[in-house]
Each structure stands twice: as C-alpha cells, then as structure tokens.
Image (tube, rainbow, N blue to C red):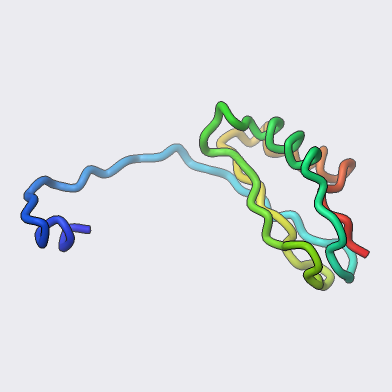
Length: 103
C-alpha cells in the first residue's frame, strides 16, 4: 500500500485501525453425503442471533454450496461474532435448526 501511495505521489502515512477481537466457530458435518438444500430463513434467524445487521463484525460464511459432496467432519459454515454469548446462543440454535440438508 505504501508503494502504491508513493507511485501516485501521495505522501500521507497509513493509518492503523485497531479492531475489537472477533470470535469465530466452524460448524462441521456429522455425516457424509451431498448438500441438497440450504434454508435461507434459518440463515436469517442465525444471523439475527449473532447480531446482524447492527453488529458489523458478525455474520455467517457458507463454506459449502448446493450439490457439493461433504465428508464426515468437513466445515459447512463459519459463524463470526464479537460477543461470545451471542455466538454460543447461535451454536445452540444451529444444532436444533439445521441450515444445510445433507443426504
């Protein structure tokens, strides 16, 4: 980035932004098969529990797409949150309400 600023002729210094620590948990599969469905309504529920859209550091990353094959223990999705309590609550909810349908 500094090299790019130097090439453009700008001499300002880079500002360092300090972020609050973000916690993440990876949700893994408990069986082998193929992803047959993803429930968008359940994704919305989980993300609301994590704090979206008010908490900009929270959310869900979907690691697997439709019709992908998964093995036992593969990562399906990753949950991000800045609050450990909300993250624990989302993990408990995702155990009871599955986002992915693996068959």
